[in-house]
Image (cartoon, rainbow, N blue to C red; front, top):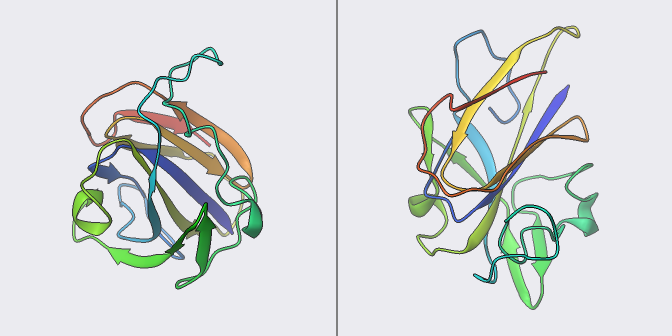
Length: 162
C-alpha cells in the first residue's frame, strides 16, 4: 500500500490523486484526510537555503509517527502547541480541493493532507499535482517533493516519476 502525505503552506487549493483507494491512469484523488489549519510565522526563514516561512520546517506530527512515517485515522487529534486539531475526512467532486472552504481561509497557515493508494505491484507511475504556494510530498516514508515559492494552483504543475 502506498501512502501519500502533504504538508501545504498558505494554500487555497490542492490538486492531486485519493485516501485509501486504487487509481487508474488519469484519475485524481477525491477523498483525503485533512488536518489544519496550523498557524505559521509570516517571517521568511533565513536559516536554510530555501524560503519556506518560519514554522514550515516543523514536523507537527511527531506523536503519530512524524511526517515521514505517519499513522493517521479520521478524528485523530494532533496537539500542536496548546491547540488540538482533528483529522477530518474530506471529499471533492473534482480535482481541486479548496482548503479555504475545507479548513480555513487564513494566510500563513499549513495543513496536512493524507491518503493511501493501493497498488497491486511496484510500477513506475507519474504522480502529478499542483499546489497554491508551498508543498511537500512524502511517498512510503520518503520525501519526494519540496516547493517553497508562492504560486496559484494549476493542476499537473508538478509531475514526479515514482
